[in-house]
Length: 236
Image (cartoon, rainbow, N blue to C red; front, side):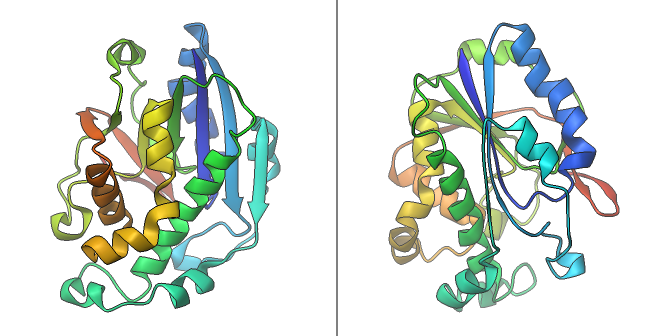
């Protein structure tokens, strides 16, 4: 199969987790005969809250890994200003006035990353991965034999912040091309989603979007972490 691997958003700690992602996902896929192509659309800052979202980084590693790569000047302030609302106030212990804008920004970058596939033909599967994701175990390649149409696959819910995450996991997802085309096209429908449901988080947007488009969600067990500036943080 021809598989697209999408890295989008803030590059964060890609340099630290690159070997892990290749060893536990990309190389096993390639050993099974699949053709993996990496597409990357990232912001020009590394994206850590603890250092004010700034910070320099070496983009060349991800750029060299990618068959198509783009980098944009950070537009965080634009998204926050455009998508200010008061919906977060009901959950002020879990979110803030920047939550909605940051969520829209994330989906914008996923949308832009998917656009890099435009000239690529016959993509069978798409994996969307955060650039700071760390696999605690190898991805189970045999699972791909059972992939269904009109379905997005995501890890089991981590059990946190149900009122704002709606049990959605947005770190890592995969599916057939048509299903992931809907997933990655969420940004193009963002205003409709907000008007329809009043959701304001990245997970809330995805929950609404997939339900509205009648895309199924199937969960699978994936033990993984994210690499923060201070080290690994267990997610699922």
